[in-house]
Amino acid sequence: MFEHILPLIIIALGVGLLLILIMKLNINTFIALIIVSFVVAVALGMPLDEVVDSIQGGLGDTLGSIALIFGFGAMLGKLVADAGGAQRIAVTLIDKFGEKRIQWAVVTASFIIGIALFFEVGLVLLIPIVFQIAKQLKVPLMYLGIPMTAALSVTHGFLPPHPGPTVIAEQYDANVGMVLIYGIIIAVPTVVIAGPLFTKLAKKLAPDAFNKEGSLTALGGMKTFDDINEAPGFGVSALTALMPVILMAVTTVVELVQEMTGAGSHLFFDIIKIIGQPTTALLISLLIAVYTMGIARKIPMTELMKSAESSIRAISMILLITGAGGALKQVLIDGGVGDSVAALFSGSAMSPLVLSWLIAAVLRIALGSATVAALTTAGLVIPLMQGSDVNVALMVLATGAGSLIASHVNDTGFWIFKEYFDLTMKETFATWTLLETVISVSGLVFVLILSIFV
Image 1: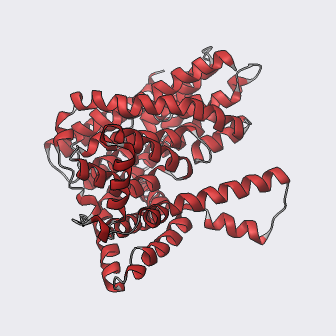
Image 2 (image 1 turned 120 degrees about the vertical axis):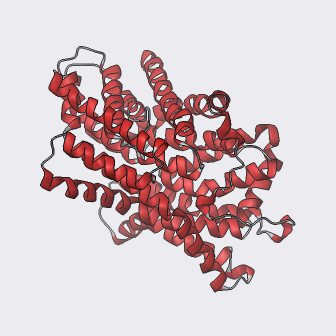
Image 3 (image 1 turned 90 degrees about the vertical axis):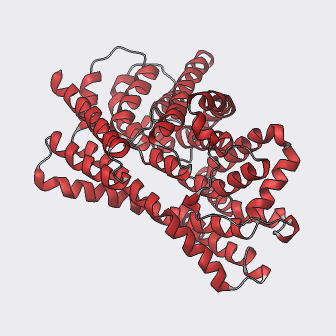
C-alpha cells in the first residue's frame, strides 16, 4: 500500500517546494516549475536519461496545442480592443442588461461562447470585453472574471464537443446527444453557484484580489475611446469577436448532419472540418478582424501589425509558464502516478458514479490535466460498470466533474488565470482553485440528483 501512496507524498512535497521557490525566494515562476519538474522526476524514480525528454516532451506538447491558439486569440482580442470593438460591446451589454445584472450578462455570454470554444480560446477572446466592462462600470475585474471563467470551465468539463466529455462518452459508449442534454441541465445551476454566488465568497476570502485595478498587462494595455461613436458598431464588433464561435459551431452542426445522414467522406466535409479547428478558425477570424477593425476603418496596416505584435510580446511569459506547467504534468504521468492511483481504488464496491468522480478527482489533483484525468478514469472504471445499470451518460458527467476539482500548480489553467488576472499565488488558490472545486462538487451533487429521475 505504501508504494502506491509514496508518489502522492512526493507530489505534495513537490508542490510545497514550488510554493517556497515562488513565494519565499521570489524565483521566476517558469524557472521554478522547471526546477520542480526535475526534482519530482528524480524523486519518482524515473531513469535519469529519460527526465529531460519527459520535461521537453511535456512542454512541447502543451505549447504545440495552445501556442497558435493563444497567439491568434491574443492578436484578435487586441485588434478588437484597440479598434474600440471591445468597448462598444461592453457599453452595449451595460445598456441592455443594466449595471445590476451585468454579472448575468457576462455569465450568459461566456456560457454560449464556452459551448463552442475551448477554455483557452474563450478566455483570450472574452478577457478584453470583460476588462472594458469592468473599466466602464468601475467594478473590480474579478467581480466579472470569476463568473466568466466559471462558465467557460463548466462547459469545458461537462459539454460536448469539448475533448474531455466527448472522448469519455466514446469510452463509456454513451450517447453524445444525451450527454449534452444532461450536461446542460447540470451545467446551468452549477454555473449559477460557481459564478455570481461564489464571487461573494471569493471576495471575503481574497479581498485584495478584488481591490486591484486590473491593468491586465498580459494583454499589453488597451486604448479607450472618450467618444464611443469613434468605435465600430456593435454588430460588426460582436460578429468579429464571435467569428471563431460561429465557424466552430457551423462545423459541429455540419459534422452532426453528416453523421445522422450517413454521408460518406467528401471534400466539402474535409474543408469544413479544417475550418472548424480552433487554430484555423482563429486564423480566419484574425484576417477578418484585420479588415473589419482596421482596413475598413482606414487604419494603416503598419499600425494594425504593431497592435498584433504587442499582444504576442505581452503573452510570451504566459506561454512559457503554461508550457512549464505542461512539463510538470508530463513528469507526473511518465513517473507512473496514474498507476498508483489505480491501484489504490482497485476492488472498490462504491457507487460507480461516486467512484468515477473520486478517481477522476484524485487523478486531477495528482496529474493536473483535466482531460488526462478524465480519460485515465474511464479506463479504470469501465470494468466496474459491468453488470451495473448505471446511466452511462451520467457516468460521463460524474467523471467530467471529478476531473475539474482543485486545479493547482500542476495545471496550466492555474497559471493562465493567475497571470491574466495578475494575482498572487495565495489569491489564485483562494479564487481559481476553490472555484474549480465548487464546480466539481456541485457537478457531482446535481449528477446524483439527476440519477434519481433518469
